[in-house]
Length: 230
Image (cartoon, rainbow, N blue to C red; front, side, top):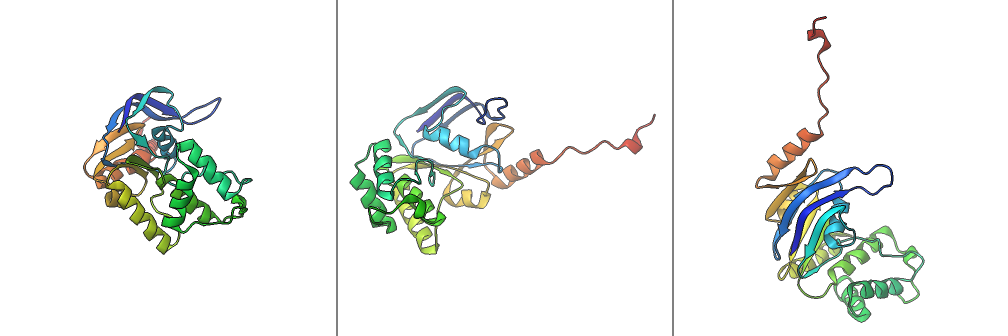
C-alpha cells in the first residue's frame, strides 16, 4: 500500500522548479492495479521515483505499508565502470536481498548469465534494459510494483518472459503504472487516474481522460483583432 498525504512535488533544480504534483491525497491499496495517464514531460519519472521511495516529496508524506519495488526498468543504480556481477551485488545490498538470490533470478527467468569479468559498459542498451528490469522484478515476496512507461523490454521472446514474470508477481502484489499510452494502461490496470494540471484525478474512462489531457495542452487561441473596435 502507498498513501500520499498532502504531497507536492516539483522538478529538480536550484533556481526554478516547475510543479509536478500539488496537494495529492491518494491511497493505492495493496493488490490494486492502478494506471496513471500522463503526458510526456509531465513528471512521470519523478512521481515513480517518489512512490518507490528513491526521492522525497517537497511537502507532505508518502507512507508505505509492505514492500514497494524500484521502478521497473530504472537503471540509475547501474554503474558503467563496475562489472555486471558487482552491480548485481550492490543492488542486492540496496534492497536487502542475498546477491545469490538476485543473480539466480536473473539467470533463471531472463537467461542473464554473464562472466564475472563482464563490464557493465560493454552491454548493449537492450541488455542493460533487460538487466535493470530483471533486478526490479527480483524483489522477493509480495510487493507493489512501480512502472514508469516501461512494462516489458527487449526482443519478442524477452518481452514474453517479462510478461510471464510480471503476471506471476501480480498474483500476490499490486501495480502502479504511469504511462502516456491509454491502451497499455487498459491492458494491465483496472483502476485509473489522470495527471491533469498537477492533480491526480480519478477517472473511469481513459478516452475521456485523454481528451482532457489533449485540451489542457492545446495553446490558447489568439484574440481576433479584426473583431475588436478601436
